[in-house]
Image (cartoon, rainbow, N blue to C red; front, side, top):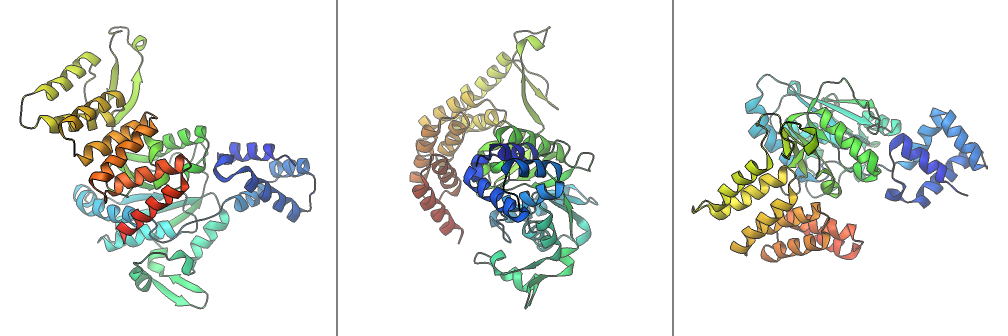
Length: 412
């Protein structure tokens, strides 16, 4: 049987990249649904899922395999608490912190967010959590908030005793935590997702983008930009760290948190012919800064680099970071190399260089830079994480797993 039309429909409806889960897995799911519907002809089944929203929902439920647990990638929640205590609360008196969890799966993530915020000292009225998923079955499980031991992994499970009651049917979440999360059905792949809703201050969108095709990835990142207030936070999964390089999101550089701040800078570069008065200028638009032509910006950068002060090499690296955040990767790489020539044992220099090389698609050079950083500091989790992701993308599963195990040992 040929299931390419089924794959095409899933791509169109939910943005699924068939390569992310494999064509064989999609074929098996379609065959299972055909069996349950009593249909033996693939063409008849394809007609059914286009005519019956209920059957298409059933197909999606079988395609989606929820894989989540409480406080998954714990460092994200630690940084969330740190951000709320040190930045959000002091600067937003009498404001309600708005958080979105999408996809929320069976509820472990949004409930973890609620627990983390309460333990950070916020009162229940200080924050609002919306949780959205495409799976109605997952949403029902999330609303019941009854979990088995599989939802509790890791060494730190003290929260289980504080926020759950154990029954024969499983671990029942306390009502106070349940009431903090508002669940709704939705499809992030749709262009009008949550259109018209009040914006959020924090969005958790972890381990979803990797399943989308390139067009849906790009559209979804634009949607996430729309949903977030300026200078606010987006949390993603570790495997998605390289997908935001050309967006308005800038890494907060907190090891293993995989958090990004929505920048006020637009990375859209206007073409020369789009400016009639200054047709030779290569411009960068900024919501607060004046528009500066390429020559003036380069002179400004050069003045920092060439200034004969004691902090000359620090200026090199800081200017490289600034250029990187603005999307000027080749110039940033040059400054990184200049910095490393003067600071041959700089771990930070090699990590930034590796990130920039990866952004330019020079993965082999990037691997070497991260390896040099790890040689200088074997416990540098950010370098280890980037190298693990690169190894995975190169198909080197064995070495990638060794690196993930090494990272896990650092967390324990």
